[in-house]
Length: 222
Image (cartoon, rainbow, N blue to C red; front, side):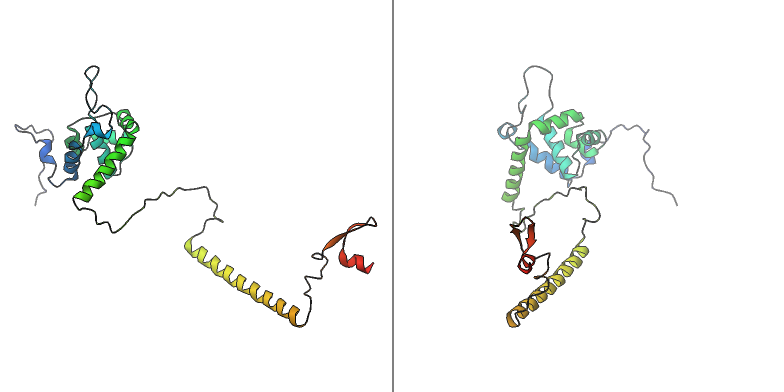
C-alpha cells in the first residue's frame, strides 16, 4: 500500500488556490469579518476612522480591530505574537487580506483606542442579546491569580486548613471546659485558683517607703 499522496511545494499551477477557498464557511473569522465591517467606527470613537487626505496611508482601524478580536478569541494578546501570526496564519490572511502590520502598530492601536474598544465589547453583548444568544441564567466573574512571595509555613492547602480548624475547635472546647470548672469552684467553694494568687499575676502597688513597685500581698504581709 502507498501513503496518501501530497502535492509538491515546487509544483506550479495554472489556477492557484484563493484564500477564500482555504477558509471554511463555518470558520469564526467570517463572523469577525462581517461584524466589524458593520460597525460605525467613527461613532464608536476610533482614531483615523476616515483616511487622511495627505501624508502616508495608515492602516484601516477595521483591519486592526479584526486582528485584535481574533487574538482574544485565540488567547493571543502579545503584539509581537500577533505580528508573527499575520505572516503565517491562513485565517489572518483571509481576515486582513494579506496585511502584515508591525507589532508597534498593533500596540499603538490598542493604546490609543481603549475607550472605543470598550464600546465595541458593549455593542457585541447587545448584538448577542438581540439575537437571543444569551441565556442570562449564569453570571461569571473573571478573577486573577497572582503568584506571591510566600513561605512554605504560611502556604496552606484545603487539607491543612481543615486540620488546623479542627485543632482550633478542640482547643477552644478545652478552654471553655476549664473556664466553666474554675467558675463553678469559685461560686460554690469560694476557692481562688492558683493562678490568681501567684506573684506574677498579683496586682502591684507603689510603696511609699522607697522600695518601688511591690506585690500587694507582700505589702500586707510586711
